Image 1 (cartoon, helix red, strand yellow):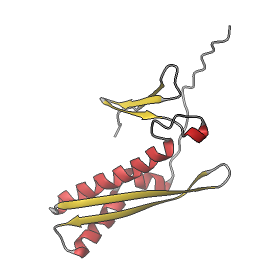
Image 2 (cartoon, helix red, strand yellow; image 1 turned 135 degrees about the horizontal axis):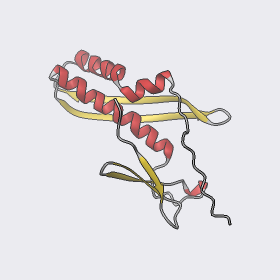
Image 3 (cartoon, rainbow, N blue to C red; image 1 turned 30 degrees about the vertical axis):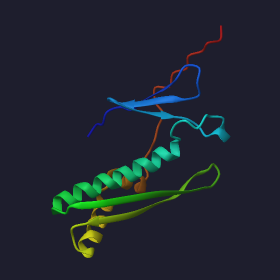
Length: 141
């Protein structure tokens, strides 16, 4: 199923960029150590947010199927980096769910949500990422 395109555009006279999809926006920046102003999300944070958000949405979807009322959900996403060039070695999600259900049912809910989380499962299998339609616009006369 095709999803809406996400757009990213550098702001004039700033190292910041704005990203948008539909009516939703966020700011992207680099850390101060990397030359940015640290006023926006960094790519690694966005990846962790995507994994955590996908896990959360899957929990909500699976809970609705089972008529389980979620009282509280907390998800912490940690990434281990390494290698040369540096890349993600492991992503760990710590999930806590409080719900109107037995402990066994909640554990099953978490397991099923983990198995059905689209972004999480895409990352587990690996996915090809390509750069297409590259355009170079020179300002040099």
